[in-house]
Amino acid sequence: MIEAISLSKHYGAFTAVDDLSFQVDAGQVLGFLGPNGAGKSTTMKMLTGFLSPSAGSARILGHDMQRDALAARRRIGYLPEGAPSYGEMTVQGFLAFVAQARELRGSAARQACAAAIERLQLGSVLQQPIETLSKGFKRRVGLAQAILHDPAVLILDEPTDGLDPNQKHEVRRLIQAMAADKIIVISTHILEEVEAVCNRAMIIARGRLLADDTPQGLIARSRYHNAVTLRLEGAEAAASQLSELPQVARAEISDGLLTVFPAAEGLFEAVSDAIGKHGWAVQELKLEAGRFDEVFRRITAGEEAA
Amino acid sequence: MSALRTVLQRELTGYFATPVAWVFIVIFLVMTAVFTFYLGGFYTRGIADLEPFFRFHPWLYLFLVPAISMRLWAEERRSGTIELLLTLPLTVTQAVLGKYLAAWLFLGLCLLLTFPIWLTVNYLGDPDNGAILAAYLGSWLMAGGMLAIGSCLSALTRNQVVAFILSVVVCFLFLLSGLPMVLDLFSAWAPQLLIDAIAGLSFLAHFADISRGVLDLRDLVYFLLVIGFWLAANVVVLNMKKGEA
Ligand SMILES: Nc1ncnc2c1ncn2[C@@H]1O[C@H](COP(=O)(O)OP(=O)(O)O)[C@@H](O)[C@H]1O
Ligand SMILES: [Mg+2]
Image (tube, rainbow over all chains, first blue to last red; front, side):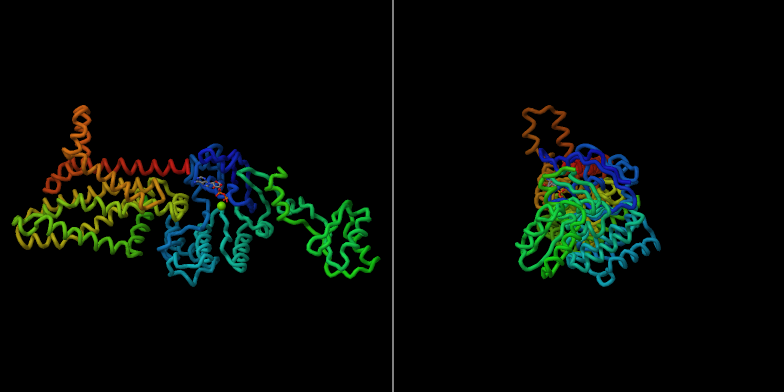
């Protein structure tokens, strides 16, 4: 279990993390979401014990990160922001160093390295100095280093930054595959990533916790939740006719798309009926789950505090 | 202990993974030769010892040791690897000692590579090899003292140039503190005890005997204390940085 207890971090007069408290249990994949400068990285640095908090404390698997950091660090895998690594070392040399520092010896070390190399597909660059690798490979080396010792707790600061879509997909699959028996915290500003891999999402801005929910729960907070969007000719006329329906609260047109917002249950059926009744030529029709980006913007703009 | 060795090994192989180590070794050897033969008058003295060789070591180290120490922590901080290193299951003390010992061993290697001059002096005459050994040891200890200063100052900044300049200045003060020029500044007003203390801190004073081959226990203890003090300060600086930045 990860426990953050009133974590705060001040840089001079500036408050980067402001009284943050939360718990993460095994099996959870927590996504830290927030605009740049929200305090995500600072929080992770305190969770891993790299920074000491100005106030509050962090406990990992029962170990206090200030008093008992070594025991905790043995069980944490950490990808710091920007995936730093020793550029002059080869991938192989670097992973061997981390294995040794992780107290793995002999065949255990070799197996751990081989497994990480396999999982992150680093086989083709093993003998290359890390500084000569592409950004995507560097990030994967950072991830390999983090999962090398099969840690119970994984803290990954922007694990997919700089990866191409295929690589992003691979890393997400990797995280999902490891999720069952680990505690995983990732930070990102890519909303779809949270939907794809996390079963819990926390939105922070200006160092404060603004929302803590499942990704689905957050999406359901969208004003688009259960709205119906259509693309059709004569959107204005259709809008005014749909507005008459008791299930419709409001109709909006933007970019040629007509969206009707629900006032009551059964909106989608009512809209379908109306389409049939009026014989509209509809090119596109969808029931919206909600729009994550809209929720994110609204929450981080300070209009809502959870 | 094994964590310390892990860090030490990584550092040491790191030196030779780039041309830096080789460039440094060459510069070190060339400078040593220049100092010994041109400025020291190695041949013209007509005495079979290495005094002209060791006499210039403090001034050689004044610039070459900070060139090694400047990157120790500043580079880790600039590249972000410090975050990786200090979240591995090892203590700050182990990291400091591992990096320090690697650099010190490297300087020791540079010193060992000056062996041709020792061969030369043995070929030309019949020197006191015990004294030469003592002087080598003393020289290495002095390099270690400057290295500890540089390592600590390198932890203060992410900028290697700043680390270099700070280290040169502080090492310079430690070198000079025994000279009359410096002591005169204090003698007008400071109590004798303080003046003695300042004079006692001088690298030059402690190295002077050593370079003649007299390895006094007090000089040995002095250099070990200097190293211990600055490395402890190094650990304190790194721990403080956890709290503030
Ligand atoms: N060493 C530092 N000194 C001063 N301010 C800092 C320092 N590190 C981070 N900050 C500030 O703290 C805030 C939070 O930073 P960070 O945790 O990196 O945000 P995020 O990872 O969410 O983008 C930012 O405004 C940043 O400028
Ligand atoms: Mg960040």
